[in-house]
Image (cartoon, rainbow, N blue to C red; front, side, top):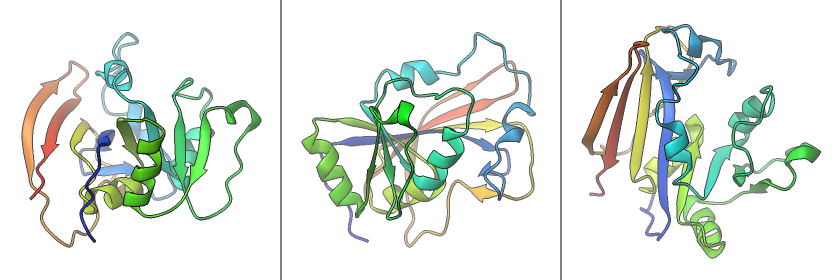
Length: 186
């Protein structure tokens, strides 16, 4: 896959189990709050991160999971769902959620044309596609202290090594460990 050259910055902010899974095989996230207690006033830098992004890009599977949450977690932030299949957008989300398909460079070109400069990329397959294309510059990964044994991995097979530079690691009283990395373009 050819590396992407774009003016759009793409970042990942995601939680994994200690054994590297972002969800159970069926997409369930029930384990997220099993690993340590989460104080009500602690968002682990999520709000500050969200204030830096113009829009979210996620795959259809991730959208289907998040759409089922009690509350839509992204407020009025634009969300782009990447899929080649039809997706039903709930009426209450029609103003903020759109659907797009195409290669990573094509998607980035369309989003840059909207004037968006910083994207939050979410969902296992979508993150893997953007990484393979060289389109991710920053990753913030929070490890939850729970082993789930199997599930959907954050990272899949790679055609080449992807080098990272460690930026910072923070630990939280609830037992979570969050590491930030810069993706080095080689």
